[in-house]
Length: 424
Image 1 (cartoon, one colour):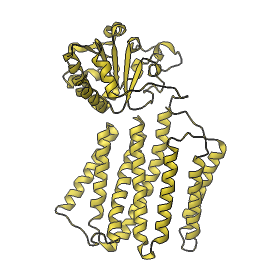
Image 2 (tube, one colour; image 1 turned 90 degrees about the vertical axis):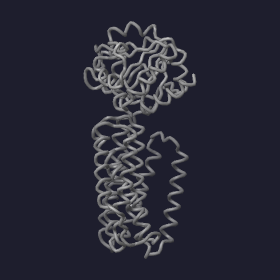
Image 3 (cartoon, helix red, strand yellow; image 1 turned 90 degrees about the horizontal axis):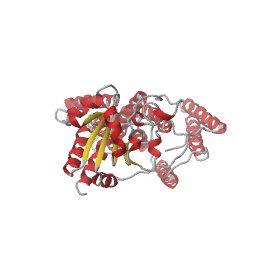
Image 4 (cartoon, one colour; image 1 turned 180 degrees about the vertical axis):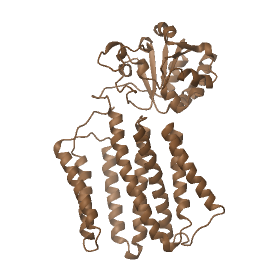
């Protein structure tokens, strides 16, 4: 969990100067007479924006790797730019452009995996960055191969290529909308793959004479992807740091650790929440409950009235997984049982188990009835990140010494726990 960071004034001024330099660079590059000066101004702006980051007070993880890759990338770029022949400049531009688009797409992927956010704008910009950046990357690689004559420069027409391209394009758009409406990790990887394929299909039918035109289009797409990735980074940082004013230690474990805890318990209560619905992990949770029951362990589901996004959401979700109705216990019925429970497994719930509802009069959830999971002997939280729940406040249970956190997608984590439990 990261500390909330406010940039010093000199850092903000430096970023403003860098932005002005970028604008001046673009203006200068509009004319052949000033283009060289424009490139130099842009390089100074980029160096300033990058260099300031290292002295801004932000704690950078993996600093050695960052510096190492900066050095390697700078050396490769310098050598390639100095050795390239003027006649080969278009393919170098295509290659550099592809790297930019690919980098933007990877940033969006990493932010999505790290930041547990259902913010609509964050998801929209993430999808846009992945699609546009991936198309720019794969398309630029094909243009490079054509210009470098590593493949034929003639149009490549595959059987039913037009219809295949249309089908992939439609699938990409549908996948993007689906990911926004119902975020799931496998959808992100599918979207990334479809976008890469579309970039290839888009450029293959282009002949060598028209490739420079395509490079211009892909270059514009890279610019859009990089701009969108900036929003993804900013909004991702805001969502990841919300409600976390200080660094506090938590205890995390592996799927094997959780399996051992569950396997040696006498009574287990499962608490499903919105994260379970997002991951579509209800069937995997039922599989886990069935496996525990086979081992002679008492299993119940604790159902909060407003768990999820609407009343009755969890009941419907678990009914889809054929969970026996008698195992579903409402809040008033299950709360007295937590103190006699060995392990509580919380899957994607947060606010409905947050003790701040009982103790913090300033909390937006104060006075809301909650599930008393903090009364159990051991608590396991399945979470994608340390991001607070919908109410935007921290859950003190996460920092309780008897709490173990298992980070990752709920379905993936539960699958691993089930596999490990079979060997306990």
